[in-house]
Image (cartoon, rainbow, N blue to C red):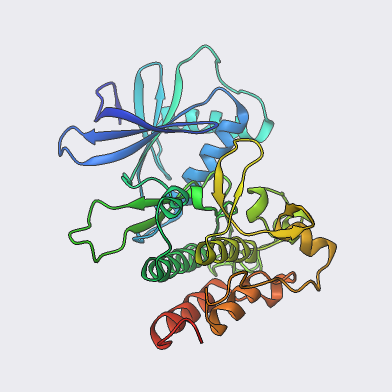
Length: 345
């Protein structure tokens, strides 16, 4: 259905990235709050990122409390808007979707650049910022750490079960929702977001009906954010185990409040690393130089127990086959959280 009538009222800008602007908005009919991501399709790389995010989020048939939910995606061209969805037979939709795919594949604009051409993603509104901001503005808290680890491992197991490899897990891409907190005893809800670099693993050619294992889906394009990337990503041959490595970096840094300063933005970021003399290097870089290197975990005494220490070391193993998969990781974190009476033994 094509419409020129807006369904949402934009309230304020809440974020701005390299290829999008994000607004807080309300649904006109219900007054419900949502987040609206506006993407201008003026560059092929913008189109590719937008398509990856749409394909990943729209491929999920159910919702998970810790994964951002895509309410709808709207194509807008010269003031006319149409919902973007899989299986639509609309000639206008097929034409515009075809232009998007052609732009992504060819690396050049396949539509009239003079047109006002936008994609609008309508998603959950998260009122607490991102995990990086949240953690660095508060003192370390064991209860919060435990809650965040369980939520993140559950989200990753859900994504991998749905054949999605995120490829850019980092605190900036994990949002905080606090709107449902009724008491100070409850922890915020995390939402894994920003699927612009994600990959949906397709079924095998031999048996299209059988879901492919993300741990057997090999990728070659190096992408992600430097300090959170796995060593094998740089070698151009990796699977979903790269997500496990990234989550290991996040959890290690969260437990010990390890931070570094981004050289480009000068922003303080939560993330673990290896010290080499006076400089710090990403863990992946140190492991590529010396795969047998023993990581100094924990850096601070009594920041974690023996089971947690062992699990993080396995998550950050140089060989991806030595890392747990997302389902084992979720189970082991639940066991650590609920069966250990003390984190200091």
